[in-house]
Length: 474
Image (tube, rainbow, N blue to C red; front, side, top):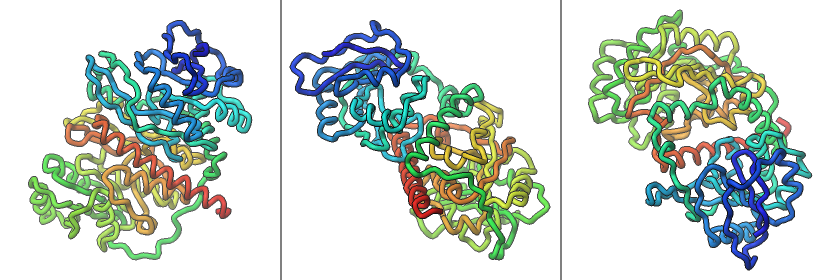
């Protein structure tokens, strides 16, 4: 095989030509490789057809047949990047680690390719010539490179387990709180500078792809519909007898200068939740207890039951059935922001707490990466925008929620941000309670892949919509 070139950030590079080369392809240890300085300069010097990138610091077991398979698929598809599923080797037991397909909406910087990628040198050189050099920081350079490659070449996922990675014991010892903190690491102040750089790269990509939108300034406009109250608290619920009373009491104790109600969409609970809601609804006239006729609804479908109902107010404000508003003035604060900015949507900030309502890491989640000038573009790179989410009902009725149990709010936010300016509250007005039955921070691999693929699909659709809008001059 041709000589090993060097390390750049998290990857070591190995030069390869094609699958027919007669000599063994076996890879030497990266412990003998010197760190490189500038990835762009290095890439310009490559003369082989392909570069195999392996994550440094991992014990990767990959044989000649697997490498030949990567090379064969690369030649057959003319892809710019090829990657595959793999096994995690834990105590000599092989655990499948399937990955998801790359698509135009996979622009988030944490897309998981696995620790082995094959790059086509012709694709690398073509995009460097067409779009310019990469950032000096190697980690940023890889993100920039694969986004640029994706503009002109396919990124191909081989759904085959071609190699294995030996699991390290310390990597398996994380408790739930540490996983939760890692889940929100991109929001930590210590990562703010890097996030700004990643946002800049993603925004440049959107401009090249024709999906970039200038700052949104459109306001909600006058209300041409009559509403029974100004604000409705929307609570979709299924089997939450342990927390639904707390959620409802949190809403009932709100102090406002306007009339509001609470719409509880009870999705055919079977654990006693329905009886709890009925008792409270009989006591408090503000509670509207809706039980859908349909039995195929998820969270998004339950939201639709609420917003299209005759009892929904001018503003629809989220309250999950296991969460709480942080103070009695939450609804008033949201309504004031709506009034001040005539927004189509307002998004707040929340604090993560345990079952005893004690703050736990990472604490406040305020999504300060959102800026009025570019938040609607950066939203395509990140996975969330904050809570509680509140909507102008008249506008929300024009869009509706997808009938899914994850990402339904993200879908609506992307759609609204395509056209309207969104209001933000950066102080904590909501308590997001973490307990074993509700956390999304510790997910099965199958569910995480399904969630990631769906959000990427939402981004794919949104990028396409924005490209079409730009072509029409809108």
